[in-house]
Image (tube, rainbow, N blue to C red):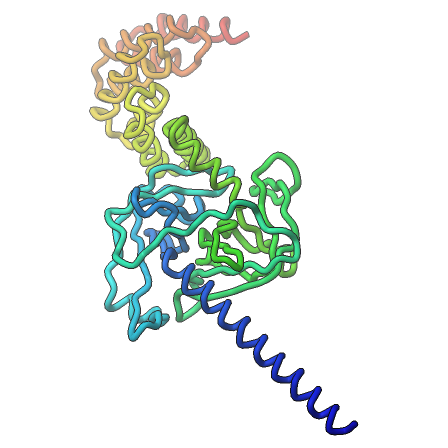
Length: 374
């Protein structure tokens, strides 16, 4: 009986060792497969992770919050030595050159960004999108480039907790993208990286660790990625413009003029006929005392829409600051005609009339402003 127990114990032990070996082999296979399509995304403000979604088109996906307002980024791919990935960050800082990439489109609601690369290095492959999202309890795997670590291409794994619709800006349930909640402990720098199943198929894009919870990490579900890619052929430009305009308006609220100018110029690269971007750019250039440039931007806005009161106002202000009283007054009068309820052109016109020693006319302009505002 004792010999039987020993044989049974030995058999169980051998089975356990074999199972562990198979599990380790499977993890190694998933890691190597995922690594071939994974990259580090480098911006002027930090780093994140990304993955190749289409090698023929040279497209890479990462998180929108990784690229921020950048239009150009650098993409770094793994290097190998004797068949093994080189994980030391120091090697890449000294030896490896990154590939240039351009941000084609972002989706702030889904926290996704699409980047077009100059080239896809030999050996780099695209990751296959899974047909279905994972179920609770399934094992998922992640590869990332956490900023805290001295290593790159760091592997993590965990279980799926659940999938749900969540608003990413406040983490509340409701109208938002579908996300996968997992136990994987993500860190800054892992954002934008691939979340894959046991077959190495992509099921999500890593978003962030929820700071107010324990081991609750969010990843954007694969169905959202498909919709993001499908939108490229229909309203890609509109989404780019909307995202840049949103950032520009926020920058104006925070009085970050350089940031606002950068975003409006980005809008105009995509949509050169955007009247709002032109007249708002004119206003920022006036703020920066670049009056000649402000005049050019305002004139373009007026050519696109000669009823744009804001553009006429910025034009009048620029001429006023250059002491070209006649042109300034003419532009401001047209601004008032276009929209009599706007207050700024009255103030500027009154100021000009005072400089021309006509205080009575200046007061009349302000009286008219008051009447129309009541």
